[in-house]
Length: 353
Image (tube, rainbow, N blue to C red; front, side, top):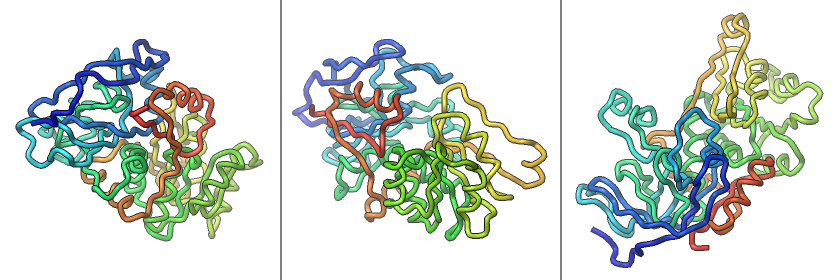
C-alpha cells in the first residue's frame, strides 16, 4: 500500500569510504517489506554517532556504502501488508533502533535495544540522511500530529537517550544531577528533561556561550572545566550540602570526564555513561567504589515505551530543542563543526535542499 507520488530516485548523503567525506548524490528509493514502512523524511537531526559512523572509529562494523542518520522525522508514504497500526499520512520517526527480532530474551524484557539481531539506522542499515527511509513498523516512533517535525527530530535520539539515562540513574525529584557536556545537543535536552522530572542540574562544559545556553535552559549551576582550578570540589560545592550530585550523566566525547565523575559523585550515587569517546575507558578506585557504594552504569538508547514517553514531554511543551537548520547538502560542513567541537545545541538537516 503506497502513495502514488513516490519517486524512483531521491537525494541522499552517502558515506562511500570510512573517514568520509559524505557524498551528496541521487540514489534509488527502496520499497518497504511486509513488516516495514517507508517514511518521507522531512528533517533529520545530526548526532555525534553519525560522525563516528562516517569515521568508522567504533568497534562495530559499518555498512558501506552507508546512508547515515537516525533522527528522521517525516510522513508515512508506504507500508507493507502486515502493518496494521500505521496509516499513510501518519507522522513517524526513524530512530537509532531500526528493528529487532521481538522474540529474544532482551526483546521479551522490553530491552529491545540489546537484541543481538538489532538493526541500527545509519550504521548497519541505511538511515535518515535521505528523502525516503525504511524502518520496521514496530519500532518507528509515533509522532503526534501536533508536533512540529523540524523541532521534534532531535528528540528521536538525543531526547530519548538522555531521558532513558535519567530514568536509569534513579535520581528523584529534588536531587542533583551533574550533566557533563551540558552545552551540546544531548546536554541541552538533558537539562530540560531533568528539570521536567524535578531534578536540580549542575551543568559541566566549557565557554561563556555554553554557560549562557545552560543557564537559560534552567541549570542551577555551571562549571567550566577549562577554567575551574578544582573541578571536583566546585561540582561538590554546587550542591546545597556539599556532598556532590546524586547522579552524573556523562555525555562527553573525551575520556577524561569519565575518570573524574566518580570523584565528585556523592556516596551511593550513580554515574551514567552515555557518551562513547572512541577507544576510551572508564576506571575508578576499587576501594572508594566499594566503601562509598558508587554505581557505574551504561545507558543505551530507550525502548519503545521510553520513546513515546520522551515524545510526550515534547508534545506537552516541556522540551524546547535548541537547533539550527541547514540543507541536507551541507551535512559535511556540520560534521566539520562537530569534529572541531563548535556546535551549541543541535543541527537539523532539511532533506528538501
